[in-house]
Image 1: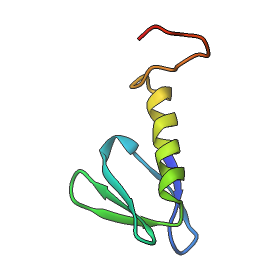
Image 2 (image 1 turned 30 degrees about the horizontal axis):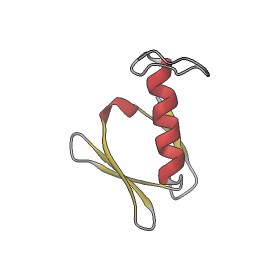
Image 3 (image 1 turned 45 degrees about the vertical axis):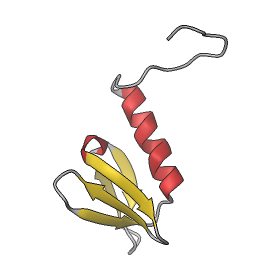
Image 4 (image 1 turned 135 degrees about the vertical axis):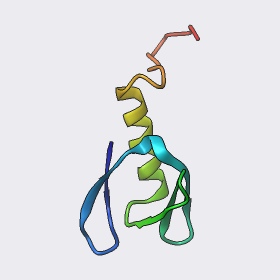
Amino acid sequence: MILLTKLNGQTFTLNALYIEQIQEFPDTTITMMNGKILVVKDSEEDVRIKVEEFYRQVGLTAMKRIGDHSV
């Protein structure tokens, strides 16, 4: 789950597993797998970073360590 901010300033928690697409034009728009569209204050880059951190926390991506050359 990631914490995001609506355009009206209210924060909410979103299950990042259901995000299909993130675009910034100029507002950040998140398209969910069910077709629902959310517009948030957070930048596209900030959302991407939060999603990547969430994926690491739940074990969906491997954490790279400095000097670790294994795949």
